[in-house]
Image (cartoon, rainbow, N blue to C red; front, top):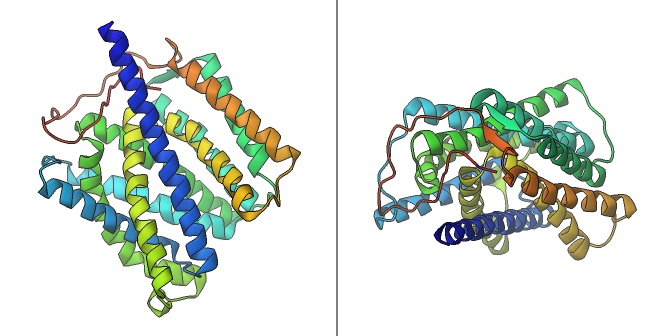
Length: 335
């Protein structure tokens, strides 16, 4: 009975973590779309830097209040993470600029097989036949409803390649660092957010000028635009935290697979708020296929042998400290 209660409690927390990530991710997409399309704030990299400044302030306040205990992350590990994370952000922005929307979506879909490859090679992960097939169904469904025009060029392909691999490595590293150094999501954010904030604010204005031919300091900061920037930064705290929580509780592959539910929700909300242009039978069929694949993946990966490590354990360098904000980070049996 106790085991069942513990399992139910874990399942409830898992669902809450996913919902937290979905709500904040969809929310920030809608706010950023309004900020960029309606108010002309097209400085994506600088905005991301501001997101991490806000996240840094949040972790600093929680540490000052005693909710986050001090922890250690070697500088070499932090440096690698920041490089992967910043290349991911910059790579995605450049890939969207240089590629068609269709190829950009294909690149995003390819993150799942790349993440699978990293887990197989680095974590000795083994997937069952049903788990592999369910991932394929998700890729098919999302591809059907999002991939339209597909054209590619050399520099766009290189940008997409860098974006995909750096994103997959960054998400793998979130899970890896939490396990190896017994860090909670709050602890890890406390280490990484300041470094990302500083580096992105340093290069962001120059990169944004290169991409848009506009200077961030010359932007007309009206009260409404500033309000949307503040709202975007506030929601970003939840987005960053929920990403770390979800990847810490699950794995990068699961985060990618079920995370495509956000793609479906964004499409649906776009149709609801911005009209039904683009809504057709192909899109609806793609959505249904993707949702079926996600349900199948959740069921297949949670079964014994659905997704497991092969006699491989990662040593941890320290134990959790009591009294800190943390969440469960079981090593084996993750989905």
